[in-house]
Length: 230
Ligand code: SF4
Ligand code: SF4
Image 1 (cartoon, rainbow, N blue to C red):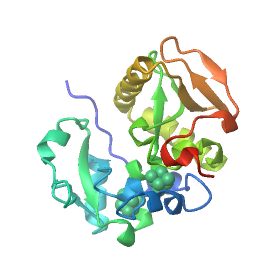
Image 2 (cartoon, protein in one colour):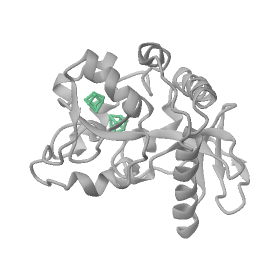
Image 3 (cartoon, helix red, strand yellow):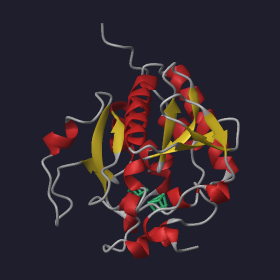
Image 4 (tube, rainbow, N blue to C red):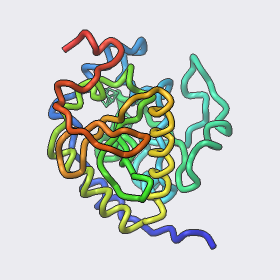
């Protein structure tokens, strides 16, 4: 039997999850390091946004900001949309927007609002806090400056996904799989996972056994060009 797919009020969802990750434009910190001059997460050559099927229907009815990703939007590196679609959860589809010069912030997708984070799910299915998309360690300025994440954003992220998972428990599975993938990657590299704990505070999580060690944000690692920069 297919899992229940709830209808979701995206006007209300977007209103509840609308705070910036840091209290200034972090795009101004990363864009100078992208040859295209765009913030990395808004550059279709660097990241392809996704949206739930219900979310896509909502967006299509309300804005011209988005279209279904064709794969040819990045002129320098066209891709086969079927290949990436095969790696996309069944509940989602890949989209492309008009680009950062034409962003309509009120119609940013959930994937834009959560970036660079996703909810970390333990092997016994507890939502423990925020972890980052490790593929963007060298490019996303926020990942090298986790100490500057707004506490209000952090709290709203936890509230939003607590509500979301209670409305749609099946979606916990998607993030459980992503968390498992992160544990495998970090275990292979003998690294701990930095986590913004749902109760507040920063910790390093040993992926092999789930042990947490509190850490001062100033001691968290920095990556790429951001190792040397403020
Ligand atoms: S979230 Fe990261 S990649 Fe996106 S604009 Fe901010 S610093 Fe750049
Ligand atoms: S909708 Fe806005 S925030 Fe989202 S990827 Fe496009 S430009 Fe970036």
